[in-house]
Length: 274
Image (cartoon, rainbow, N blue to C red; front, side, top):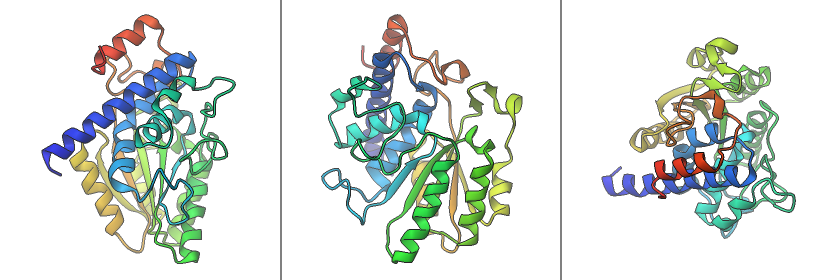
């Protein structure tokens, strides 16, 4: 990837992070930490990787993204808004009673949302079903699912992995957001699910690892997943929870907490908005 495109994607990711913080601050609730950690992944998916058209959000031929860690809806909404699915200004209505931007993604009310999610483990399971359906339909669409590392402690995740490996769903790509933290602390303190690579390989998956914050690495990882045939692929993306906001980085305290007005101003300065 040339430097100009890297710069362009970095600016898009910055705007997505701004939207995340504005949405959560406006709602006085939400999940900023894990949303910020996947901002670059969402940027690459929606602005480089996926076959999508905001003018045709229901196109049957489109690629699909399931945000299995649905509590990180601020990240998805900000990506969709910046991609043109709905106005960026609407991010400030997040979690308001009259808003179509609920606390978790809702495919019935929000343009661009391909699956309602929130109960951890279920999103990746549905994504596997979508991938099998595409195979049955002999369709070229690809299915992507973003999951959390804390989410990978759910047994249903590994049922989905077994299913996808058995059916050799090479049109399916999981992205594991490996930031090492979940709501109650670090993975090793709570219930460490690592090593993920060995587990996925045991279920018949192609395993790829990269930085979640390096667009060159993301480009190579997604290209490798797309080219691999005969097995589903998982991209283990090493990330920083709260990436881009100084006081949120590497802190589980910001898993599900909104910044106050003073913290909001600091975050906006960190993100180049002040």
